[in-house]
Amino acid sequence: MIRPATPADVPAIHAMVRELAEYERSLDEVRATEEHLHEALFGESPAVFALMADNDEGEPVGFALWFRNFSTWTGTHGVYLEDLYVRPHARGAGHGRDLLAALARICVERGYERFEWSVLDWNAPSIAFYKSLGATAMDEWTVQRMTGDALKKLAAMADEAAAH
Image (cartoon, rainbow, N blue to C red):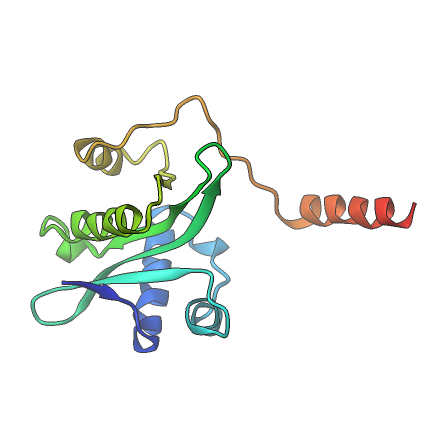
């Protein structure tokens, strides 16, 4: 069953974020706490949202965390899927497909024209799964990221520009 996340799901979401990061060989990069996730999802002005996948016993076995993006080309919002994860023991039962289908339904119902996400280039099982659902790789685009000192240095340039 797919349902919106509730505050009671935050510990499970946090645990699965850590499981996903371990699978992606990046557990040491996870700094988010349950408190961070609770505030982001259920604080005064949430800008991220989550869906949960429960098995037949009502146990949370997967989640999808997403936020709205915007396309200046279409003039519409879209959904950006930040994380999709199904616990290994629950894979193959359709939970991942159901989470993606629920997000696709949100797009269609709200008039959003794009549903996008990133996948590691070595994650062949996920890439094959996404292709089987009709997703297309945006091979001509590369993801760019700025963090840490580079982010701070660029921010300082804005301060310098504002001072002139």
